Length: 215
Image (cartoon, rainbow, N blue to C red):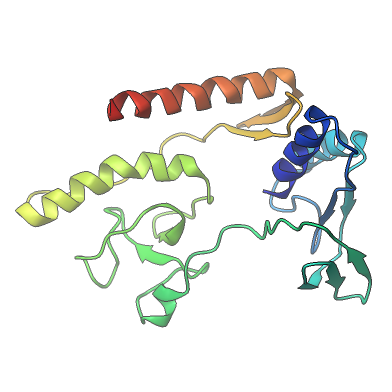
């Protein structure tokens, strides 16, 4: 997301001792609008202390190699632009006539099957889970993987399918660079180095697990 990109670009420039670039985040509406004010406020505070410009209600109309043009008519020079428009399912599902959810993701049932074509399975960011809307975060894709594997094999062998349970509310941690982060778990929200340390520990442990499998 844009906040993590901005924070880590800032860290990269700082670590390399180069002239600090002007970093701007353009938001169509409110900064981090899909998250609570408790989260967005903490993230915003960290970035603004680093002189990152956050321009709210600044919808982008056009991006070229050298310029960013807003719907309002304002323009900004740019040397490098990161697109952080969020995650959207491929239009292939809607265009093919398959049933889709409100976000145009493949509409699947509790077994991660297309509601119209049970021989089609899906998971991750490309689906809309019929039982309940799921955020576009990696944790759900990870939780769906073993269910998908089981159900694909079971479908070929005509065995019983396994329902997908989204599980408990996930831990959300934003990596803002510079060894700082913002963490949310249920009603708990805090920021700082502890949040980053927790994220780093979880991510490292996760990657080591799959590296071990490859060996």
